[in-house]
Length: 185
Length: 273
Image (cartoon, rainbow over all chains, first blue to last red; front, side, top):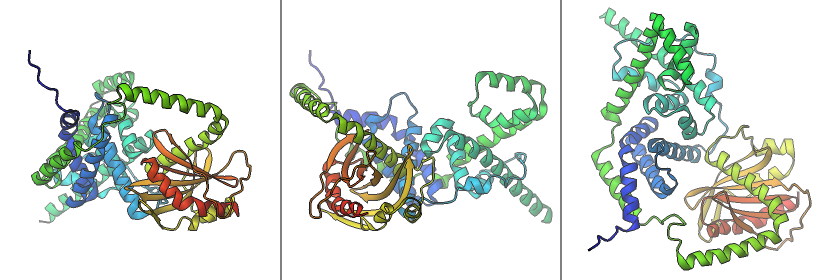
């Protein structure tokens, strides 16, 4: 019986990588685009992330969350780039500054538009944006988020708590401002 | 469970991060509390609104040209990426590996005292490289070398100017990204992070545990001890009562070229402290 020759190992590796990792590029790009602020930087970041993922794909454990694994690589690449740009590690921890500045937990407004939500998210400090986006948008677990951002689990939880409260305050403020504008016109 | 407790845990409840028993307690409370039910619904709506906004806003999506370019680049690269070690380990290679392993075990046995002492330091150096240079997750914030000099003595001052910010090696340049003093696993290091061969490499100096001074002749090339520790290339150099480590995820030979360029002057300066 004639046998079909097995595909070369490189082709097999590519096929697996293509099936497992490439479907996540769209969401990975949205993350990169959000955090980098411009399209060119985001494309550069995602390309480097995917190249690193390809080179170390043998370390990925099948059956685990591939998107979380890719997000972890993306965050490491981001951190390394930030370090190279700033050449400094010794910055204030924003958690310390913001810990006691949230006056109350605002109620969540009704009838939110995409613009409202992204606008409010963009106005809170980036450290809080990171945990909210990874946990609430990307639905990573606290543990996966801690690994991706290389911060302790407790820090993820405290930043989430404060970040969500800040987000609700921002949403409440923006809706109130909109209500005032409507009343004036 | 009271309303206050439930509100504290509502987001974790939505994220499925609570124990089953706690979920049941919250569900029991929700059955009887309309206010908490409304709060939960509002938070769920906010979460859904964020996901919708993030995944459907057109300004955040990748362009089709980028997606096509990325796919092509990755597919081309996939055919040049080396297969991981072990995949093609067959026949003669296995025999050769066995012989090499036996030789390595012999050397390890002969030098086990050195390996025990230096190996512990090397593992700490690799841990510091991973947790400080690559992942920023040290328990204690790094301090400047200037501050470390005032607190802990002169060796830290040596690292303020050595190596120079731009180092030339026979395989390419290295650039210093930052210098500081940090603590990993209870051990204090003077730490210089360099960018070299497309990756980050750490140069770490710490005190030897035995406190013995090793003489470093003025003109001599210091002896480099090379090895792999926790999947990282490591090179160590003795310098008086200090150990110098070079750590990075790159070829051992490339790391050795960096050590060749840097270790000599650094070891001599440290010996003079």
